[in-house]
Image (tube, rainbow, N blue to C red; front, side, top):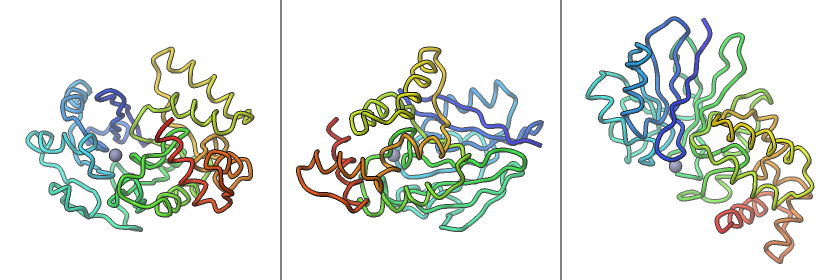
Length: 260
Ligand SMILES: [Zn+2]
């Protein structure tokens, strides 16, 4: 049976992802920063919480765990992190877990935080997907709070190696502001202009722009394009120095975005 993935908006701009197999009541939630919208959703659609998946320790991804566990006796999957005491099954690079009839493999992707992991899957007969938390966003990437630029670059490259059709389930609706920044970096990128038009239309209709696909991100996301001459040029001009190493380019683009 197909894997169904629901979008649950939370706070200002977070997305919590809830998935289950079609026709089954056992549901799994990714990064429940807030319990209330998850509890309401489970009740409304007559679903049971069978597990919680965590990508990293930030409170807007973990704040709802305690309350959810007071309602449901569910395992909590996540990274080996001292900051998330509720984790009952710690996961490492290459580990896999089968939930809702789908096998999810774990990628360690430090940079935004040191404990950040992603969950990738290829449900039978469906597009591959990845829950990547705050590492790769539509048209952007997370801030480098704990890791180094090199770690973040390598983590983004790990995600960029997934198939083009991979659906990118990131944890925030940051797309329009990310696209505005991307256009400042690459003003002549036509794919970026097309995506901006499409996503502005979606937002005007109140629709999420997430998930994007990796193929589109490769064409439009500056943080996946740091190996290209156009990005090296933009980063060099911004830093007033000659940058060519993709890690240096990404570091500079990230610093630029931090103050954009
Ligand atoms: Zn975060």
